[in-house]
Length: 150
Image (tube, rainbow, N blue to C red; front, side):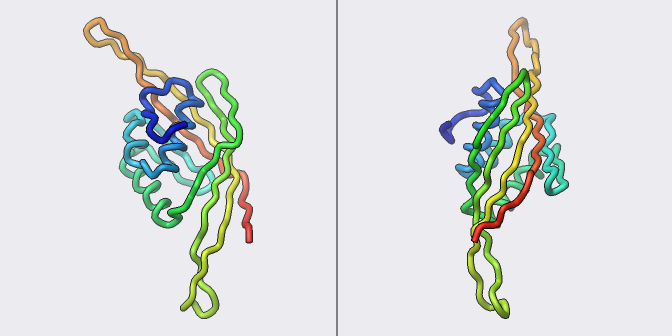
């Protein structure tokens, strides 16, 4: 899916999830988060974090990108049922770690395997007899394990 996909143009939970991953991989964090409905929940169970505020979620993603600028998330499989999508993914990045006395550093690659559950609620609003719908995403991420590669 192209990183230029606009989240509001995507209607299925699977399409929204893939669009979010593409936007994050492309560094389009503010655009990605702005597409969320004002009432959303993003839970990262592995880190014990929950966000319901777009500004805080944007800061979280931007800090993650700052610390690990080469991060790439690849969705390896998805399952969709009704307004839910479950996606298995792999995150690959490198971290900078001190070596020896701490005056030297090296970059060490690592990868994580995880699962995200996305629930989409469609909000219907009537404005002067015109009916339109807007997807709102609620996310629940669960990191299943960490694999460190040399």
